[in-house]
Image 1 (cartoon, rainbow, N blue to C red):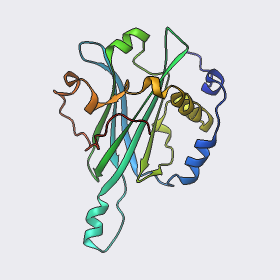
Image 2 (image 1 turned 45 degrees about the vertical axis):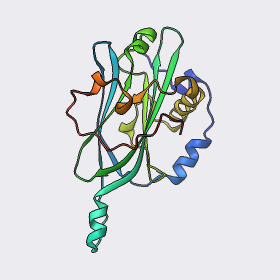
Image 3 (image 1 turned 135 degrees about the horizontal axis):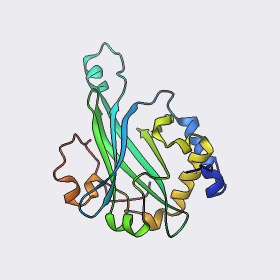
Image 4 (image 1 turned 90 degrees about the horizontal axis):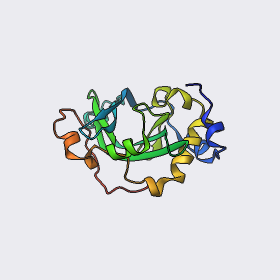
Length: 207
């Protein structure tokens, strides 16, 4: 598919949120994304984004308690934003956010997000999204962008901010459609033997 930059296809978007995030972002991200896979799941042709992630870095210290605590990355927020080409309109947008209590250094965790099969079939969504963006905050601090956290057409700050703005514009009507594993249908997750992170399982809300 010939690529046209999202900022041209989606229209102009303000850069205020992006600039604020860059000013407060960490120099070195504390989260590593090892793999991102998109596939279909379940008998109803549901859609899944599977993200394998881990904590990075240990803070050197001579204090035993501090060293022990430094093995854990606390208060992590992960956001996934997506756009798909659709038969009903040029693009549809989804976003979801999860709060993770803690990641332990040296462990690899599996974080899944799902779209129901009815939505996939209704909008005739492909397995591979047109664009995707992962972002992270640790204790309220945005993590600096890493290229592998986004699709190839979202490598520019302007394109990423355009996706963020379009997801925000449809947030109310799309809320709760793209969901993390703990809100997914049981048949999607019951047989899964993966190391999921401990979630702060709050109701579905806007950030």
